[in-house]
Every structure is written in C-alpha cells, then in structure tokens.
Image (tube, rainbow, N blue to C red; front, side, top):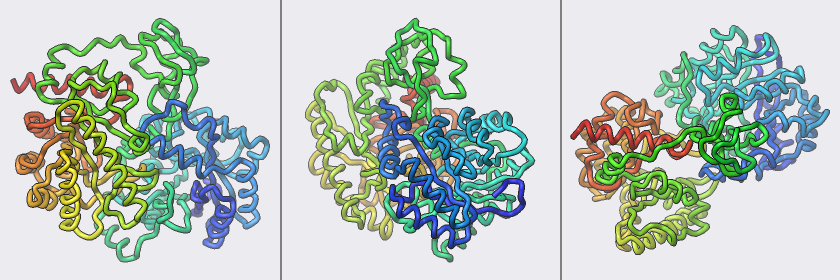
Length: 613
C-alpha cells in the first residue's frame, strides 16, 4: 500500500478494539482479510511512560484505565502482525513516543508502515524515528492549527509519507467531517492524501474517496455497542437513516476547505492524549530550567515540545514542585488581582470551577469567595470531605458527566448497571451538598448534564422533574444544565435532543423546573436552532437559578474567552451577569497555566462592569 499508487488502500484499524485479547485481535484480523482490506494497523504505548504521575484531569482516569485494560505487549503485537501478513495483509502500527518503538527491538522491521497519531504531529523525534526505518509513514492532521501543521510537514523529505485528514473525535458526526480539507491538503502538499475516519457513518469515507483520498483508515469491531472508547466510532447505521443524515448534513460534511481550526473535542483530546513537560524535581524561583529537570508525559497541560526551546535556560520566577507541569506562568511574576476586580466579582456573585485537589490554591490566587466543585465519578465515590473548607464561602457542585469510563450519567438508562451507577453518583453528590449547606448555612446547588432522551421530550422532562423534585424536598436544588446542540462526550461529538431548544424551554416552564443557564451552550444553540439567545434568557428568567458564563462561536466553538465569540454575545453576557444567582466562569481550561484563563475572564468582566457603570 504505497502512497505513490493511484489505487485506494483500506486500512482496518484494530486499535484497542481487541479488548486486550490476542484471540479477539486474531478474529478481527481474519474478518478484515475476509472483507478485502489491504492492511491492518495496531497501536502501542509503554504503560510506564504514557501518563505522568500527576495526571489528575477528569479525562485522564477514563483514558488511562482504558489503555491499561486494552494493553498488548510488543511480543503479542509482532505475532499478530505476522499472522496478518500470512493472510496477505500488510501490518502497521501507531506509536506515541520514539522510545516506545525501541521496545520492539529489531522486530520493529516487521511492520510495513507506521501511523503518526494526530496528537503527536509536532513530535519531530517520533516522526524521524519512523522515517528512519524506511517504512511509509502516514501522518494524521487532527487536533492541530494550520500553522502547526505547516511547520511539522514542511521539514519532511520529498517522499515516504502521506498526510491524512482527520477529525479527532470518537465518534465524529457528519457535521464534523470537514472533508473539504482534503482538497486543501492536496493543493498545499501536491501529493497523495488519505483520510483517517472516526465517523459514525462509514459512508463519509466514500465522499473522501471522491475528493481524492488514496488511503482510508477506519476502526473495525464486532460490536459497535461494546464497552470501550473506540467501538462507537466503528458503527454502521441503518441505510435509510444514513441517506437522511447525509442529505441533512452535506454542507457540513464538505466544510473545511481552508486553514484548520480544531473543534472543542479535538482541543480536549489534544490535552488528554498529547504530552507536555513535567518537573522531575522540585525547582525554586531563581533556578534555571534545564532539560535534565523535565520529563515529557501526558496530559498536555503545560509547555509542550514545540514551545520548550523558548524556555530552556530561562530563570524561573515561581517555584515548580516535582511532578507538576511546567507552564508559562512559572516564568512570570504574577501580581495579585486588584481590590476593585475582587469587589466586582463579589458584587456580581462570580464563582470559579475547582477540583478537590486544587481548591486551596485557587482560593489563594482568586479570593472571590465563591467556588464550584467539578468532580469526577472516582472523586465522588472516593468520598468528599468538607473539613478544611471556609464556611464563609459560597459553593456549588457540578455532577460528573460520566459514571464510568464508558457510560454517561443517565438515571433513566435502560441498562441497569448504568442506572444504578447514576443514582449512586447523584445520591453521593447530594449528600456532599447537604454537608456543605450545614457548614455554610447557604444553599448549595448541584448542576447536572441530563441529556439522554429515551422516548420523547415530554417523558424526559416529566421524569426528571419528578426525580429532581425529590431532592428538592430534602433541601438540595439539583439543576439541569442548559446544554449545547452538540456535546463533547468521550472525546467525540454527539447531537443532543433535550435542554437546548425552544421546545425544551417551554417544557421547563410548564414543569416549573429550576435550571442552570449555560450562556456558552445557549449561544451555540441559538445558531443551530435559529432562536434569539437574549429573548430566551429573558423568557426563562423565572426558572434560572444559577449561571455558567463563557463565550462561543458557531455551533461547536465552546468555552471561548469572554469577548472572543460571535458579535452580539457580549450583550447577553451582560444580561446574565445582572441576574440573581452564582455565575460560574467556565472558559475553556481556565484553570491551566496558573489560572490564566480565569484571571483574564475576571479582568474582562471587571471592564464590562465599569463600562456599564
């Protein structure tokens, strides 16, 4: 399967769909051969080097547990590759780090091609190691800006590699395919191009072929509903539903013919799957940053490989603890927020998201007196302790979106295990809220993303109103969150059918259901469904008890800094800031880099408030 040929090659991605079983992997290889594909591909990570010890973001526990569960050792993968070759297939593999290739020793030559994952596109050491084997290299372009892609590819030799358009969502729905980018790739690089598909409609691959892709990579599975992160992106929908979906989404399918901007799911996957530099020893202010003091690990929450040369040899302005990410803020002397900014935050009832492990640090840096706990399902199950929390502060809690690495929060799920897990997480979170209310003497609202419609909207709102009413009787307000048209679940995007349109607003009012209004989600829904965000906020004012504040662009540009979204959004944000209730700043990853995003938001809101005054 050479990039120079004009025939279209099909790679069946085994990935982690073998569930850690060599027998199941062999069966998938046999099925791929029977289907007539040209090649199969595996992926490998050294478990000891994959994630940093300090990896504590909510997505890390999902990915790390799945990677461990589905691990196959190098010896097993070599045996499987040779088995595939005995069936007339080519065998290849993805790697995430050049050192991991060394785990295969001389057997690395068994693979006939390599695939560079999207998150490692700028990892020049890994690309060079793959090219040095003189095997063909396929490079996925997902998760990256055009300028990064330009830098990564322009340094490569004239032959031996193929760029592959990819939208790194699992699954990627029709409106995220952006196949027009195939034309852009072909024009810019004047070579064969490919398509790495995670689509929930395999027919998108047919369109990619029409647009010039000479190689198609797609996951293979025996059960699209099986437990695991990749099975759903290997699905084949019913023919009629496919035709309708293509007709309804054709313009979005073919979008993307121009400079690349990652969507929100890709930013999330870039963080969770990508890597950055972590300190291997304690470093104090005044120390000089050296390569020997760093380790390159997941997640990507600090300075990464493309940025590190700017900081090596520089003097730290702030200490960095062993195991912590090295961020830009380590080199900046950070002034405390002005008293006027803090006063405005108090007056408006602004709040910030926190995790249990960073609560004290966030309080010290942002003493605004209000905080919302964003908890993972493991944290909730592990127990939540209110001792040590300041009783003078105002608190709220955000329910986990997930109850396991592969299951959403859904108290009305048909799957009994999912249903039971959802009720368990709900109950534990409400108990935490009750304890916080006893501590502070204030109401502690609980915000939840309830998104799964099993029959119809009427039933959805009736069931949830009854369930949440029971918690209200206990003195705890569990508030359904206003949702986006497209949610980023498990690294992929899913269209939602509740809590995001005018019909939902009507049913919220008819059931007298108190809610959390997320204005960022509201902006995206107003574009997707064609309603006025400003009018809807006014119409729902009686039901809004709590607010999440961030900007947005388009139907999936979520969590932007305030003022960086669509024209007219600032007027709605001003409207929301003047409402009763806590307003939680939810700009995307505002807590990273020593809270740089939150600091910027507080300063922007302070300026807006001054303008209004």
